[in-house]
Length: 111
Image (cartoon, rainbow, N blue to C red; front, side, top):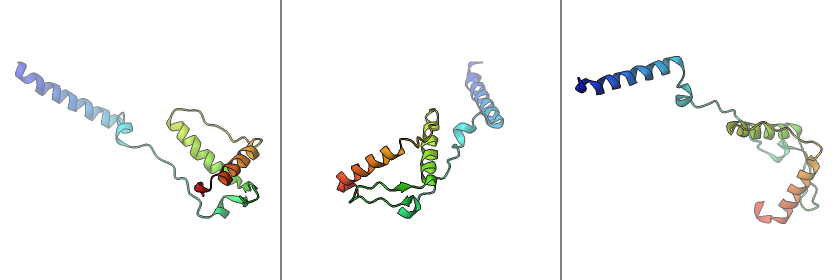
């Protein structure tokens, strides 16, 4: 009787696996989640309404569509980690843009 035990366990394991596959319970393990495509801009004019000028430390004006695209990508990554989405803070936008411009002006190696 003990000789047949491993065969019964293997058969039961196979039956359970087939059941889970047919019921869709293991789809998460087999099928990767859909990944949205985030189109990347090709030219700097694609992301700015008014171009920045690093020499005079003018930050420029990003297009709203670019801000929303980056926000969607950020929230997608946050969602993968179980974090709540964030919203764009238009009031503090100018401070972020000025800081980024100063960082770029002070770090020529980033260009």
